[in-house]
Amino acid sequence: MSYKLFIPGPVEVSEKTYKAMTTPIVGHRSKDFVKLVDSIMPRLKQLFYTNDPVFLSTSSSWGVMEGAIRNVVKKGVLNCCNGAFSDKWYDVSKRCGKEAGELKFDWGKPVCPEALERELSTNKYDAVTIIHNETSTGTMSDIKALSEVLKKFPDVVSIIDTVSSFSAMPIKKDELGIDVMVTGCQKALAIPPGLSFCSVSEKAMKRAETVEGRGYYFDFLEFKKFFEKSQTPSTPIISMLYALESKLDDIFTEGVENRYARHLANNKLVRDWGYAHGFELFPEEKFGSVTLNCFKNNLNVDLPALLDELKKRFKMVFNGGYGKIKGTTFRISNMGDETPETMKELLDNIDTILPDYIKK
Ligand SMILES: *Cc1c(COP(=O)(O)O)cnc(C)c1O
Image (cartoon, rainbow, N blue to C red; front, side, top):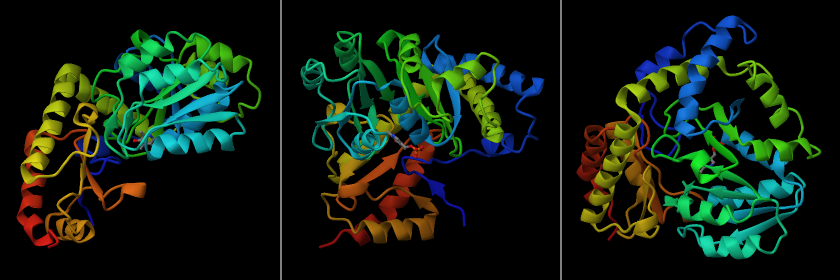
């Protein structure tokens, strides 16, 4: 059973990427492995816009999200919560045994820079988590405005999740002053899940050196030690590193600017389609994501039935809403390798069956 994914992760994987994954593996302490990492790293750093190390973690993104908490939080962490993933991060902070505070916004609202400044001014925190693009609600916060606030708090280590925006738009880590930037491979990079990334500043490394209970698997100091040898602390998901190498070839052949423009154009195409049908965007338009559209189900579509039919008849899927907004919203991803043509194909297929599923 194979069908095409237009859900906001994991996303559709190209034949070329699948093929790269079948490259015979090498030993992770061999020269061939070092060569593989050395071929990946300069281009990966370029996508992060950073001179800091980028650690390769064999885990889903949550691994490095939790790892970041365990490495840099001493006094307390402020978790900015405006959707399912960011709400969960607050829970994860507490489960790691950290002092945690929650800066709450309604789902669909961005993280507010003034509120962030007010909360950090309490002096209760030495770390903060922010999700740049809340995938559950298709809401993108203004990372530039937030980073201006963060620059006023040099003792606070910033941890920014760019899981569903990385490589689809420029997020200039060093220029923004982001300390820990985490992302994954199965969203806009369009690689099967299992590999995640974490770029860590000197300031965050210094903090980690003083934090107890970092554990082993996600310890920044371990990662750094092996990073310097173009290796990883334990056996990594080598097949996905081949996939990544192949994907970086794709990205730099297309050109990053062209890639960003393509994501923007595909996103607009879907948004305009939604508007033409009378669907409203769930977040305020100005904060709508560039990698997916989260629409309100204001036309009262029988989403489960429509999704079943779309899958059966056209072998395509999008998402019928996440968490507490399941059923009242739906999400269409435009991440990865999609083109205006492939997006139109999805939308045309939806159009063919949509009238049958609007409940009277
Ligand atoms: C998908 C996603 C995650 C979780 O990623 P996993 O790879 O499933 O651990 C975290 N944050 C955001 C914003 C996401 O979109």
